[in-house]
Length: 222
View 1 (cartoon, rainbow, N blue to C red):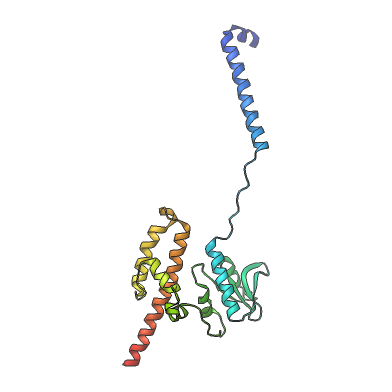
View 2: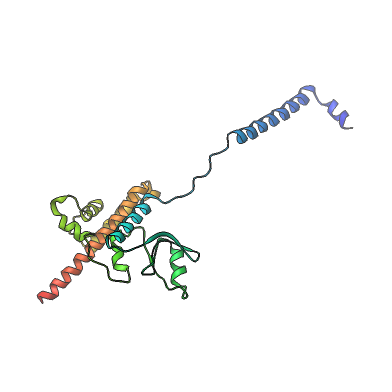
């Protein structure tokens, strides 16, 4: 029955179907061979960006300057942290999940500090639960540098398009505008976006410190 139905079809139609099937099989074979011989490159795993590497380097440098012994990339009973100060039982992490895991575990006698990627390394001294020596880092050192060159504080304000005497409100307004311009979702580069965020952290800290100092001087005159 089937053979009679095929025989009733025009020859050109039968041969067309046959050639179409052969061509489809050939194309599929080519794709399979290409995938086997020329596989796609492995997906690149997400590694630390330049901003996080730079921040870790700043923290490492700060700990060395205050002569504090530390180890890096430590596993604390299943929770990995970026830095651990064994003599102080202090853990430093960039990971929010690790921070809460250690903070909420009452059985661990560990003081954990969450270090934001935007936080300059020398800010760590304010968060450590022990006295640290005064060293020449941060905006105070930059201010003393004077004519020795552009200081980190001046560079931060320049990035935001502000004078170094700008107050906190001005810093926050400038930051909001710069973020709109440099955000990767708005066509900006991640490097520029990171630079603006770091500049904001440095400039805001300087503005807050200046405001506190002015308040102290005002009370002294009163």
